[in-house]
Image 1 (cartoon, rainbow, N blue to C red):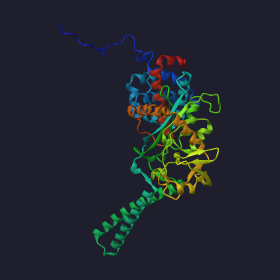
Image 2: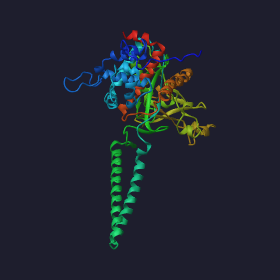
Image 3: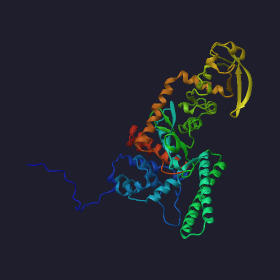
Image 4: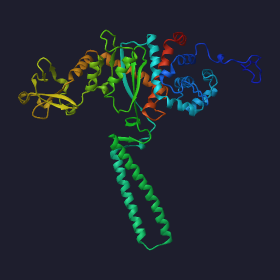
Length: 482
């Protein structure tokens, strides 16, 4: 006797008792945490629009329902408003979460656009929950950045030089068309030539309109002082690897690789980002930098964050920084001793060169907005047998900036603790790998710095929720919210 197949429920079967929405999801399903977490938020305090319905007009959707929809979407790799609209009518999790509400894609998209600034507060609120659960290690925080593509084609991003070349080509073409028109006007009238003249005038008008457009772009560059302009997303900039995009920054706690702070900047490099990210990370973790008794985490970043002014700010604020110093500059490029080979003696206010000679302060100047002191010893350089390894001039000068002591303190700290710097990559690459290659957040969907920040923080929030649910469990999380 043949075995029978497993048979589903007959679609025509009438149910004695109708099914309940509550039966769609289990008691410890992740959507239950999303529901409870958002219901516990003060949406008005977070800055969401329409957190209080108006007395007149058509009733709007509750911001809490749309926020739940977006958190669910980012947790399930569904960031598009049109895809979220489809999921609302076919996904049982969403049918339960939204109680069968099905907003259209325009409503969904407008909610994310109009509440771009409020998602930072939601991210911080989940950070407070992580702090209450003891998930912050307060031992080591790693900072890094990645380039993410903007909604702007490289063909619609122009530098000042490109625009000037473009305008020169347009001017040459306009002159050529004007010359042809003059020749046509000077020739005897012919019926076929009239059609050609009309066509030339139309093309000339189009070129002149393009000229005005390019001149307007050049005027905008002159007004803002920027080196480039993006025509689709004005806040985006030309960046390596992605064409035109933004710089996404994260600070990751070492205990559970949770994202402490997430930010997006338009800067092409990371030079000026360390202090702001480190300070924001400390605030999110509840660290009081002004209290000497407060437990402060070690904060590390790669060489791309090494900037003298920024590190001095961090040292003044009480941040324990671990940022390796890149060996750059003319001396390094020419194969000479780098500045780090010269040892400064604070008591005697002098440098000791690799051959042991003392370099004394000779003068001071203003450089990069601050004082710089010059040290040298011409007589010792003339007698030195290692001069060719040190300089191509008559003698070597060493510059010392007024905040150089902070840079040296960080360098000594890095040299004494190499494992801390090595751990950085293992910490930050895990979240970036998850966001960019597992959740496919390699490009933004919206335009403008404020709106792409909202997108990035939603991704960071979803990453944290996913990890915390894996570490703690949905049941304990729901219990903590109660």
